[in-house]
Image 1 (cartoon, rainbow, N blue to C red):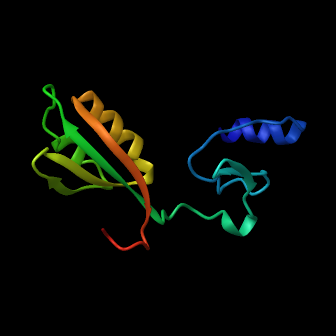
Image 2: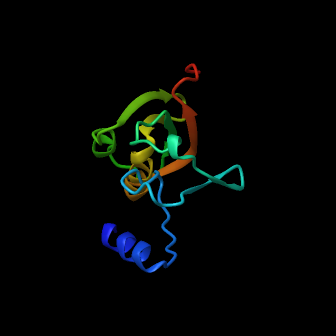
Length: 126
């Protein structure tokens, strides 16, 4: 991607790159974020190396095909928070960077996704 950005900048071409995190290694880029349905430009001082200030709470329910969650829970950045009875709903905490990987693995192993919520780490636990 670095080569693509360099060629685009040197030739004056516009390139649209969709990413979950700001590109910190390319200060000359104009970077935008979709926030509450609006497109906002990121200020230069706001673009820092990723130190996530949020986590994802993922609720999974077993189906008849559900297999063991060891592979999912062993993913770096993922912890099992609790098992809610009587439905055996599992609540996992994940870094934002791992959330898509956790969801894909859970679905592939037969689990049903009940909900996914983003929560700032500064918010108190429920």
